[in-house]
Length: 371
Image (cartoon, rainbow, N blue to C red; front, side, top):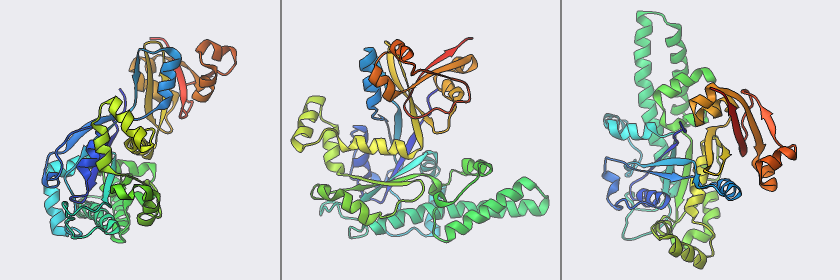
């Protein structure tokens, strides 16, 4: 079963989160008053993959299947200044709100850069750096409150009965608390494989990869790169920045294909900027793509980097994994230049890989199996 990829869209009130959601997902969710809403907007989008288009062209495939990301537009976070511990405690009681953020694999943080007198900023002025700090502070404080509660419980349990497992968890959580108290998110910490059980159990918010998206005004589009460098000059581990004009992209998203192409041509663009953002979101998750193709279907399969051929086979079907024999493999660039599977074999470009082969991005694979 294909892996589900999910991004949570968060940001301060009036940052244009839902506008960005609509732009990315070609949706028509109501904008303007969503910041105080509880139920998230949810939609699936296809990850742009030109290699699938090319494979379908070579095979004259009947269908094309792309990787998908689920975007979840979550109610606004800190909007009137950095949240206090009391406010965070109240938010933690809102199970649906917290669950929506925790379940996301990564976060897309919408940062308002545009000016609009009709949409006043809750803080009274446009200040992207301040808003970024507010959001990060809230994420870290939510984690800190959660960690402190767990530390308190573990210390009590260890007084009652010694447990090496609880002791290891307590040691890790104490290090994490120290990280957060120094105002550094958990994504900047180094963790071992043995730590994964704690990270998976708690789904800490400041540990999630984050894509900062600057929501620009129309008069700021030509300065996008400069603004990215100004507001987020240093990108660290599991962190990236990009920018689009949400208002224009939302208008593009609702056009039919012919009108959209004409609109883009008038603006001197080949594709909507939203496609670039979707691709950047996918890349931030640390996934790669392998490809399969035939006359009936050409398809992109997103998998975590480091998956073996055996793991990849299981993404298609458990029977293929169970009866795995070999993986006939070629890089897309070679296949593209040759253009046909039998010709690939004659050219000596086809490799036979076993279960332990680590799949590379762009591998075109035909699995041989017997069940």
